[in-house]
Image 1 (cartoon, rainbow, N blue to C red):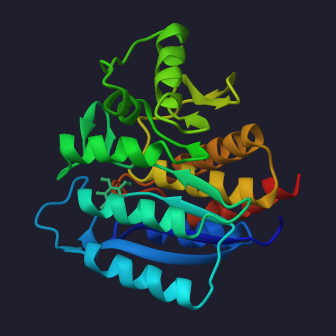
Image 2: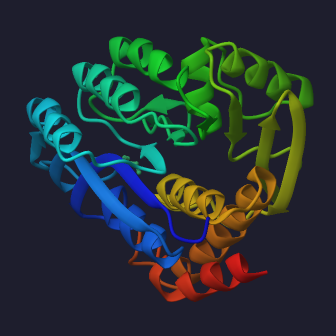
Length: 277
Ligand code: PXL
């Protein structure tokens, strides 16, 4: 499909290059109509700032959904990211159920943790509820930390293929159809994504530069969805998203003052080009 209609459900961090401020331009650059359901509005993201504002939009969700149903609005894909409350996850499941027409792709990025830790504000109850949302996904796009929380597995910084395969099997047992596991590194200087599709395991390896940047998980998931909806295979979409994130990091590390997000905008052209190939 070259022109799809995507609904993305995640927060607006007004400053900080993540969530909707990243998903919207990336999905648009991939050529899709994008609809949003903001989960919360924050003055900044929570990764490195203090004193940020947080407006939870949980209560708005059911009436927004009901209006869309009344208007007979439909989506080709629903992609969820950072959610604002544990109860909101139930409403997101209602939205999945209400708009799950034939062929509607459901992609869940369980954006809640990184580097072995949950993000500020999340707890075990949120994780338990997130497991049930992950079970509804056609494609789940977690990092290793999130996978460990979702599967009650010990987080390791050094691991082998057996550890990753065990994580994938446990993630699939949640009920999701396919998994794209990001940030999988078996050797120094390299990292990559594992695509676990229909029980088959594929690894796309690429260079690892620096320690990454804040918001790259959101960039990755958005580029993955944009590419998948464009008609690329899951493996090609995982590869396109990985190459794009790498280009974003290369662009960002030139500027030491840019610690809060990744400069994804100057390299949007590369993403668009890769979709043409
Ligand atoms: O990039 C993930 C993300 C999204 N939204 C908010 C966040 C974070 C990560 O810290 O704080 C508000």
